[in-house]
Length: 431
Image 1 (cartoon, rainbow, N blue to C red):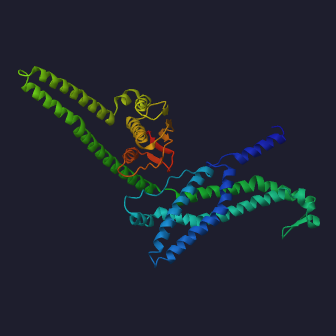
Image 2 (cartoon, rainbow, N blue to C red):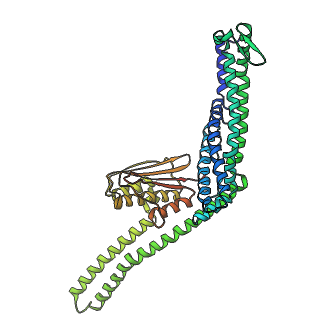
Image 3 (cartoon, one colour):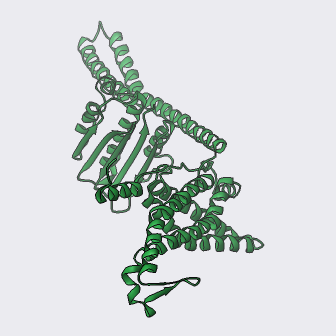
């Protein structure tokens, strides 16, 4: 092999420093450890003080309750922040380890939080683990700073008092001593400090995953709880839908068919004696039959529109948009059709959202976008109306949230007073 050029050496060093290792690069790991220092101090002290106050005030009970509630809520938000930071800097994607809270009042929710092992692990990480990481991160920062100081020593040692630097056990002067220090600084900068950073980052990945991530057994239990809740929601949604169909049939088509039968019965009785009256009754029966047919057609469209099965979301929603009194723009980017259940849920989300806009929002424009990305169907309906929409129990949006949740997806309604309103849905499309 020929001699290595300076350019090749620099390129090799740069590649060494920026190469990813275990899902993280050197600089992201260093950024994580740098942030550990202030976060460890601020968050560690805050959570520790809150826990200490909660324990100290436990004898008063009433005063301790809101403090305990606040401590767990704050820990949940900070734990979510730490999991996001780990995903961004350490390449560690962690799902929430907490089981969903069962329905109940605030006391039931507080009891579930207090008896949750994953939430106590989260508090332990924030109060003790994060400050420990901050201390280790400070050591790494000192190592990098010392390496940089030694590397640059020949450039500034002559400007120091006595033209030397005192290291306690060693005094370095300009010349050979400073040059030797620079060589040591380069070695630390290129070998020791990166390996220490990567090594600490690998240890922190395991530590964070152990305390903030789901355990295999708890993850399975959490998934079972989620499935039980979604199944319950799906059953409730199906039952509400059945009652709606029964009500629509009773109040609509059934009443018209009863009127049709009565008109035909009167016509049969007067068929020989009052032909003109019979003609009038037959005409009325014909109109009732057409109205009943329209009622049944609308009811069938409310259950599952035929155009959705035949031609997909774009065509089905285009038909919905033509009936909306508010101008609507539709953008559908779905290269392959998702499963029928997912298509149906997305259709009814948009249809219900447009119905709410037409009835309540006083909007002048609605933007509907549907995108298939990473095997998930993403729906967003945004209007410029008055806002204030809520997906509370008993509303149409609540039923849609149950339908979406039964498919493993989620729905969020962002509607501040004064608008705008956004209904966002994400549904997995299976494997």
